[in-house]
Length: 240
Image 1 (spheres, rainbow, N blue to C red):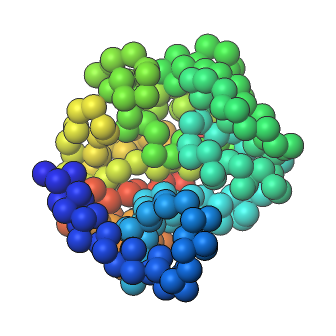
Image 2 (cartoon, rainbow, N blue to C red):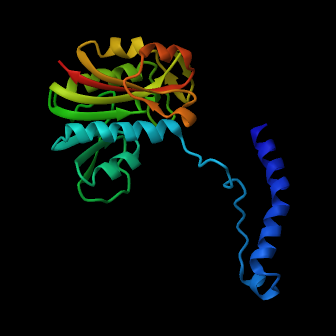
């Protein structure tokens, strides 16, 4: 249905595109002959579109890391735009299922399986992030094995490899706990705290359902989570 509506909207917008083309060419046939038609009909919007979850959670994490200023930071499969920008001033090692074709100084990629990170020693990392990732683990969406407990296994591994006193930036969808197969899971605030019961929560910030208008809430009231269907919880933990 969405694609049908988009096609109808495209047809409606097309005449105005050709009107703009004629004005641009100043009614010159010669100029028209040099122009290659490449319609972009959905970008003329009153407000600049963006994905609030990804814009705000990466901005939040960057600001937290600027306070921490670690010598080296280990990331686990978070957004590539986050680690590439962060590597401008912090040494970054990112672990993922496969190594992306990104080549930048101060940025290293290594492979691992988040549910069984045998190539990483216990209690060995002091600064880590895993953001908008765990909710996908075990659903098969990104080529990983089907594993109903995949998210919990990944969390256990993150806990294992972090050293006492280590900082972890952990981001997942929050709201009413549900599984949207094979897209993602949604967690309650209490669930996440129970998973990381051996950690101290240093900060909880929230990107609500209507965050496109409101932005991110720093040091949010956890009770707000219950009023959202698909919000984004940003947890800054410290391992005790």
